[in-house]
Image (cartoon, rainbow, N blue to C red; front, side, top):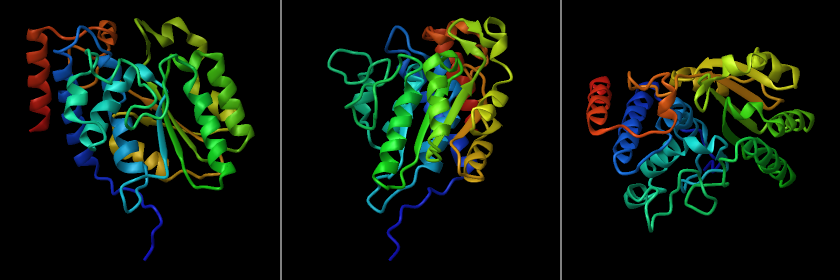
Length: 277
């Protein structure tokens, strides 16, 4: 019997349905707390789903030799929703998000089920990923380290130090995604930092294998990783829309922070349910 870990089978149509379900779950939680980063979670929904349900390998017991770290800590609601769906977090865990006696906060906390590092101080995640990848290589194990970065945190100097070190060390066991929704908090990245571009060329110049995809196309995200050449760390620049899936949230800066009112909740739910039909 072959006990080597295997890639999950990946059905793009099923992925789209899962992502609509996750968005509805996050929307429900938004009615229980004053604020959450709903727009930020919606922009990377397809990316994080693809990592967990398409890319991370599984052993026979359901464990994985691979690791996921949400460097974009404020987007953690999508990670929580997926971990709940996988049975790693309980429904009660999710229902107590940001409430007394709950374990889930507005950024991931190391020690909670499925959470590999405390993140949200933007710009530190990729540095931790480099350390994890070096440790995997030192142990001579085959684990791949996956991470999602925000485009805002790619402006941090510590991120570029990690980009430089990953390629210098030849850490081909790193697969990183930039959730490029062209927003940093309440301003467009392209307006506040025009020298940020061209982003793909910068990663190539730093020695990474780099590809640009539609970050809401599950098949494109999956194919970009499984068809990689290898030998270098991989950076997937994913073009996304902040607040994707709810018309009045898309590319509207205020949805970086606030939760929908009752009327806004109803409209968003109607749109998500219509998309599921």
